[in-house]
Image 1: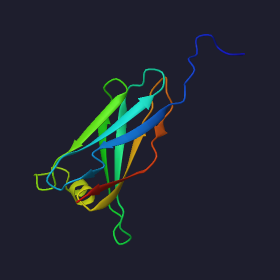
Image 2: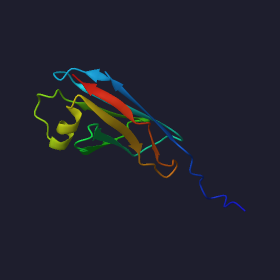
Image 3: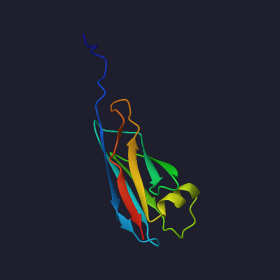
Length: 120
């Protein structure tokens, strides 16, 4: 028997987009994670991976949701980056990005599909 005071946790879905997907090294690049579910709150972790077979660098950036959306704007590659590992990964010619929603009291965690992004 279900407890009437118990709240059901629902599944969530995380979709990742980038604007532009292929950015010039001297331009910004924006990544947007859109989380669907029951009024999702909390955080999204953007995971960046070097796509080369030689070096498997990984960088993570945590961003708070504003409504169902988390937005991360990467500066141009010639800017002064505070996250050096992220700079090394996100300024390679080709890298992989995933958005991971951490979940909350009402929603289960979820991850986007891995996206290939480019800098030229």
